[in-house]
Figure 1 (tube, rainbow, N blue to C red):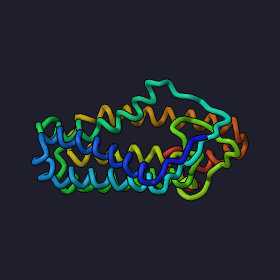
Figure 2 (cartoon, helix red, strand yellow):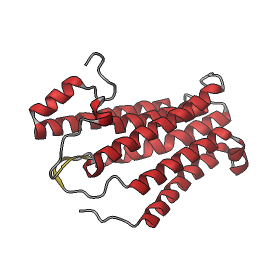
Figure 3 (tube, rainbow, N blue to C red):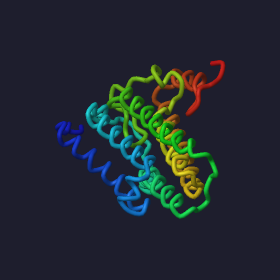
Length: 225
């Protein structure tokens, strides 16, 4: 069982993580002066920080007591953490150097910022809905109830969808295609994780989970269901 950290410590750790994200973006932008002159970059850091503080404040994951699991290889876990961390600064660096521009109008950059905020909001909502059932790997917790309401009434993996939309928003915000291969790799890893979770939950819940899968999509709602 995991121990609940006090709120001040949780908030401090969230700020440290956000500071790391911000520092990488500052370096990619070519220094602090260029960073603050780029409103899109500042807006992204604000969105990341607010999301981190929100998660720390509500702390949806309070305890872990798994009874079944399908563990990922360490390299998969590492990539799932590193890819969303690397996509924004790589995109910002490419934008500054003029590499592989997407050619979208400047308004698309702010659409990207909005997509980052939207994706983070989806992920936070999904994590809050699951609470202690959420885990960084495919696991079933003791007395695990099947969640089929809220966002989970529409899709089976809204948290992964939110994470990918936030990564896509970062690419659009800097209007460069350089990080597209990382975005595709991130999508592939998330889809593999979703398949593992679906298989584990089907083994645990049986018929009710198969019926749930029949009426929902993994990442997008099923039309007409």
